[in-house]
Image 1: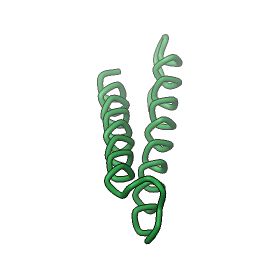
Image 2: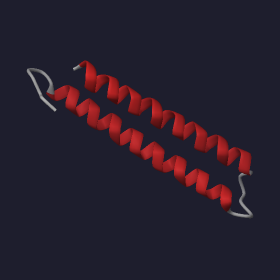
Image 3: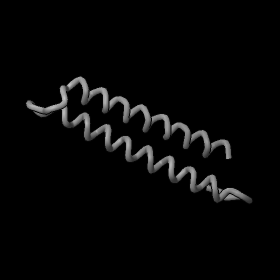
Length: 72
């Protein structure tokens, strides 16, 4: 990645967005893996909702990072 004048802030923003994306993807995987258990306190549909929400936020932050990368 070519960092031009004032590009340091964009690099930091990209890094933060990618860390957010990775953490939400891991959270989505965790919530979805809990649906395979036979007995779980939160019902399976609630776990799937949480998993889908985390995956959506992760995908959105990843897309935002890609857009920021290509625009700068």
